[in-house]
Length: 195
Image 1: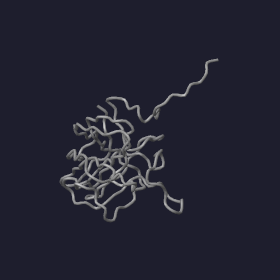
Image 2: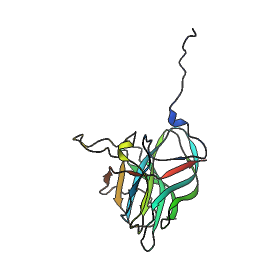
Image 3: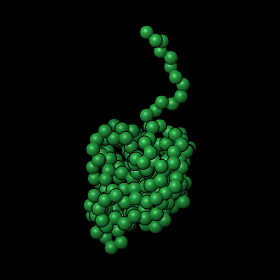
Image 4: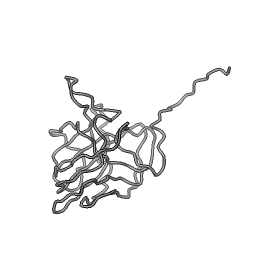
């Protein structure tokens, strides 16, 4: 029988991301669901770990229920992590622009974004007038990794991101630090496509 020889290096399955496929903020073992995003002026961010430097050419969401507001749009983007151990978004890496959310289906924007390996980033969604809007989401209970932990009583759903009040418009240069709300609902499936 051959002798087992351990290999050096990172064999994390997260390093393998297929070109031309979308990847969201979390791994999931469950089916994609929907999550209402009716709150206008709410900036929401969700962690996206990049184990190996990669280039992405699209950012997208999928609208399941069209918005009915007067100017229903959403803005998508990416923040870098602060990198100080706080596990909190810091500087804006990409404001990808707006997508109309008054019709169903995939809403994607072309980007040219290279994210450095070994770093945590945050995928961002900011709604405008988004009454009735629902988008594809990862069920909170099916998120297989949580960077933000559980509440101190160990009785709630894991914290999966942050939400802050933010007037609709271009994404702020730095993610706001005042009064963030811990997000424990299904995670809107903001996804990046590997180039």
